[in-house]
Image (cartoon, rainbow, N blue to C red; front, side):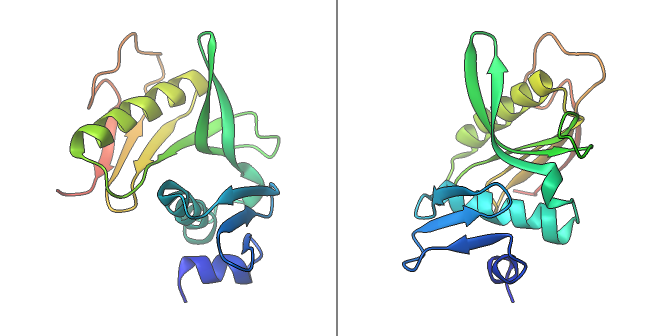
Length: 157
């Protein structure tokens, strides 16, 4: 059984009849499953809940992040507390068919969101490519790809 089928069985997600829209049950969020990025988000959410065992009530999707005067949206945040006030992991999901340059831009984006949210870790994924970083305790002035956060791992090219 794959993650999607297990997620349906465990009542974490459901689909409409045409399987065009996915609903994340714990948040009652309905999204277009035909969007290639949504497929990655669904599998990433299910990976966090089913494989890594994070409680579904500590996983929030499509979270508003304040970036200066702008409000952005983080794909997934895992919190370290039940009130969802302490950001533990910030996850940025991208569609699979990304160039290396586009993926690197996504890493920068995720890192900036993670710093703004006070996350301890950041994970950028396209399902076929992943990078994980630990965020330093002191807020960096500038983030350049690969620094100043400690890289925890990445997929080989």
